[in-house]
Image (cartoon, rainbow, N blue to C red):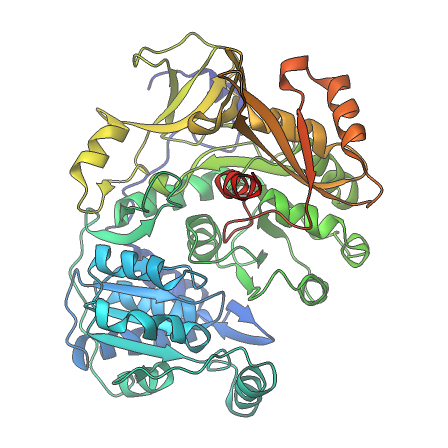
Length: 558
């Protein structure tokens, strides 16, 4: 085995290589787990729990329904469009057991985004929450999906409670816009009908596609990353090995506030935690902070995953700061850079560091992570996971020396097969086995990796490179700043200027204060030339601040 500098950072109990070929498919892994943990709680949502045994039965029933009633066959695509609810894992595991390819879809998509994804993936069946069905109705005639299955929020909460929740959501809170979709099926009916049908085990191999996971579409229209059973199993094995120093089987309680349709929560929370028999607490609407924190207070949670905005939002709530953190052992950050000020405050409040990781949809997603034994390095994305290699290259594709900036490239068993039906786009992001991330980073001599910024979001000021992350980190450290997004805008000198959009904690904050603070910590060309104050910043479905949307917002002002 080749020796890499990052191996020195591995905790003693973490292997440098793990068995990524331990299972033929996710179905084998799932069936082993549900048998092993049987009556333990697998998922909980809105006070209702499901045991591993119940998830096994219900997902088998749904698989039988897909096979017998809908006549779906191995390799057909099924889209799931819902937030974190108990229905999600049942539908997902049922689809995988029936040999389907799962297409995760953001429920907040516009009709045009839905249309693109459903047609690009050539989905056969769509499982959607009723709250979003009116958007689907608008494009029903423009997509080729044969079957639409609709679920209500309270479907898995039990007779009386489920009925009350569905009534309140629809008639009191008016959260279900009217819709009419001819021939739509009912998810609860699918579960009950499937119970009387025979389930047929599909023969699967590791190279079969498991998910079409659509990328954020930061460049043009979103593309489906084709993730195989082997890709996801490899990443689950890598994550499990990395967590070994802190986590034990059948003992953990995990807070899952990030959406399961996003690759981070899908692999880390829904799948890797299932493998160790964890009790997964699903948060349907983390934006309702008081309700979210109240739910957290009911559990002795040991694991939480999040992004910078989620952690920052929690820290700004007194009720959160007063929670009991005595059981918390692991906090993982990903999806975007965790700002230094947030990481430091989190550790001070909870006593546990945020182990920042890094990955992409195309890498299933985790490629690097800080050690979770307490040797984290704030501002770093950690070191490559077992079986993973990383390098940095220049614009000509040559590897740059250690300590110099370059585009990060990743090689490992978790790297996708390619973009669904897009050979040209696939070719552009691969150099042999190496996946080119589009992120600029530095690999340090001791193996730790630091992200400088997105290649495409770098700001060019009079020939100097300015990385928005660096400027945002400085501004976010100001006591009166809640959130910040930094962009580059063309100015009249054939160059760009740095512009900051700030959500203030204190409405008395002025642009002069922000600029003066920046000047204390940044060289002159990195200091914002303009500062704008806003009530909120545009974010992705997982709370990642979207600089391209800030840019659009800015251009709308001019």
